[in-house]
Length: 612
Image (cartoon, rainbow, N blue to C red; front, side, top):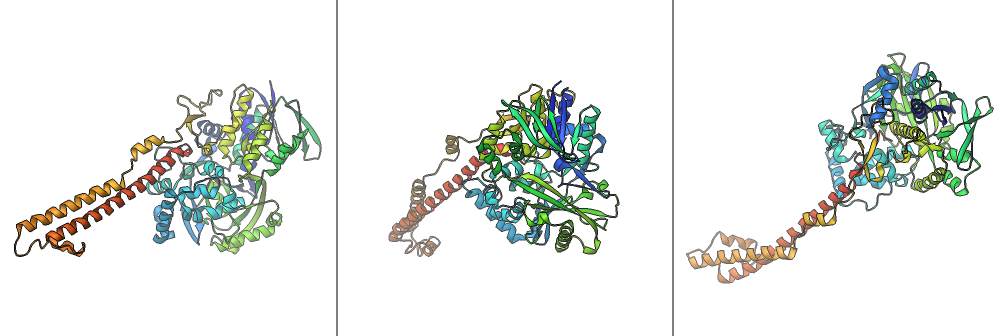
């Protein structure tokens, strides 16, 4: 029975171990901290439980939903989703609700957003290399400035123009202004084609005592099967030889260096740490690539408030630039059992930082003081109501998708693929800002690779590449009883362009000169014949009604001279009108054809804020 060593007891590491145990293999998990769960742990402070960020349990992958249900069973709750955006001293529902947004922004701002969106659709950025361009092309620049820019730059600490468009394409997915408005009007979390838009879901699953409960239970299930999770061991060296990892050396909490051997190795460590731990070291270009990878750090200021209900949301996005806080969680609204006293509320104020930032080194007392001041400033609490607080820091919480991460990741991946018994999985193991379910799926793939399958863990959650859509393979049951043939995401080819000849056939141009000549000729002939008929008929006053055209045609009257003059002017006017109509029609259809082409090219991304 093959031994497998897994570094990291977060969702990916524990899922890999759980899957391996079902495949009859022997996993051992090493964890640097004393608590499992990684970023999905639940911290207990004097009976108040809180997340390291909010963790919704929602997935379009049936296998992952079944895994969650199998591990927690009756302790897996279905919870309603409510979130808002704080902007300009107002709260806006998120996802957007038309009446709420209109009341908050006002009709003038809503009109300007509409104009901005129209401009973006007709004259988009020619390139989509960064987050700003990607979002502006889909929502318009004005909505981007209001509901994306400030919050996103708080999270990442760099300008949106320096964030790769890959991140937006991966995280926002189906959501567009059209689908957001459709959801606002119809109350649906599905796109027009029936696909679920993960950013717009209205309820989600959640463990009774927080996400850490899932992974503590998983650890217990592994232990019951005889598989160990060793806490307090930080990996320092990964010894390898001839393209195979031989063993791992970890420093225990007592300061001792322990050796762990196995036949196969799965790493969830940040890639930068893994590369620096390899012994012997990789080539210089691989180390340099690893050093270019960046990670955003994160801390939560938890406040215990003497009030039964502070606000109804699960969380609120803070788009106000005047406060440092990026988001605020209300853990009680995730699950009532997250607080020991129903007359109290625990709030989590989230700050996104670099470890080098001054605030990262502030003592708990100063950070709690900052949190109280900012809650007061946005009108959520009174200082007298805050009776306690604590702070939790998490290093390397988010791998950064800057403009250059692609090149660095390609170098590292190419090198790591030279190892025959080492796989990297999870958010930090792939340097991909995966959700929990995608991190778990990479772990399942890796475990099954050890059992003989051939899965590409790097292919999970790659919708940003615009070439494939995720679909559940028809006929796959996803049964937990058949572990080697689960319901899994299969790539389905999607046409990424509309043939130019088809567009040209559907949107054939009009000839402006031809249409102008036709309208001019018809106008001239009709006016001349009408005038001639009235002149021949004669009478005391010839053609009094037709003579009114003299107000528009200079010198026209119902005479033979006037008939010829009017016919010339009518011909010229008709030509100008026909030419203008044809030109305008061609321009509008060209714009529509361009949008049709872009929709076809973007079809593969139809699978932000709450995904940030």
